[in-house]
Length: 232
Image (cartoon, rainbow, N blue to C red; front, side, top):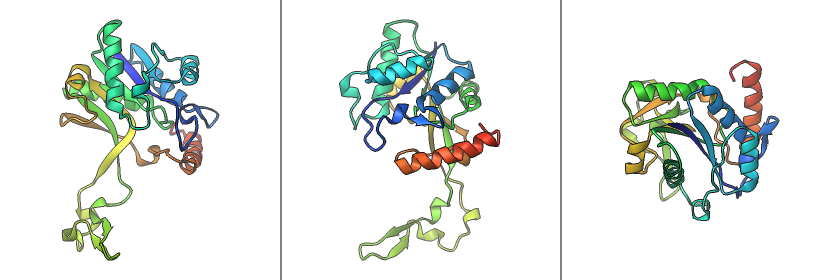
């Protein structure tokens, strides 16, 4: 069985009700649910949440909420991996075993169903255990600077001071949209990263970190531009 797992706890501090707050006219979690549904690769799309309000919104948007997440997995410090482990173990105990699953974050309005499908097909074709979304940094990280103890500046990598940015490696970072896993390997390692990982490269303009109200406003503007340009 292939499952989409969308972790969406209540209690966001910086943006109240972040996971169901209206983004460009609809609850932001619905973008993740819609992309999962349109991908056509899932037997089930579930939301793991501790909030009955989020559960109601998710159910109305077409997702299953077969359980409410335990409180000990819903505080400010709980990482994603234990939440996924709990969901997979619950599903395995209450129905067909999960062979592959995809963690999709609930605040990813730029996510595209085509990329979700690409991640799954690449995972299978390359015989990997993990495939996740990445994008390029918007500046060459290998020419980064840091403060010294006396408040001056120095290069993180002094050996790169006289090198051109185009002569240095391209660096990538996690795009924070989705993570495909082979279930049995994940349950053994219980980590989001694995050395047998392959990338799904997302264009930089479709990757927006939404952590603050200002981030939210900027993301809505970019979303509107992308939508009008037919990119979403």
